[in-house]
Image (cartoon, rainbow, N blue to C red; front, side):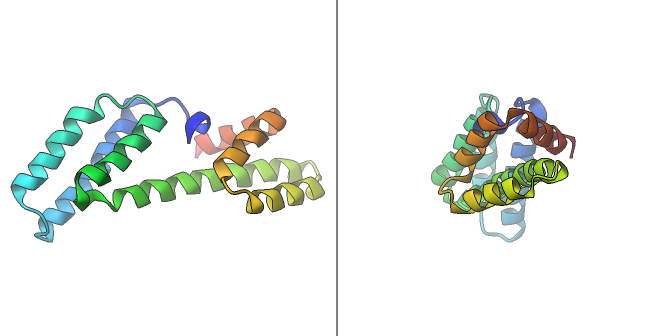
Length: 145
C-alpha cells in the first residue's frame, strides 16, 4: 500500500515466505506439482525474498511469482484481498474519527466520494494529506490491531 504501510520488517518477509510455502505444500499434498518443482519454487523464493525491503517490492515480488510459476498465479489474489481489507479498515477508522466528533455529514460525504473513487488507495492518500490528524489516529489504531 505504498506510503500507508508501516516500515517493512523481517516478520513481514517471513509471513510472505510462509504463505508461499503453505501453497506449495498444499499443491504437494494434492499431487498437483512434483517434489522437484516444489523445491525449485521454494529455492527461488528463499533466494529472492531477502532482497524485498518495502511493501512495494513485496507486491512486485508476489505478482512476479505468479508469472514465473503459473502454479502460484492465485497468490496475487490473496495479497490483493488483504491489501483491500487494510484500506477498508483504515478508512472505516478514519470515518469513525469524524463521527466521534459529531461531523456525520462530512463522514457521509467522504464515504460517498470513496465509493466513487476509481482507486481507493489513491483517494486514501489524498485524505491523509487533507486530514492528517484524523488519518494518523486511524492509522495508529490499525497498526494496533
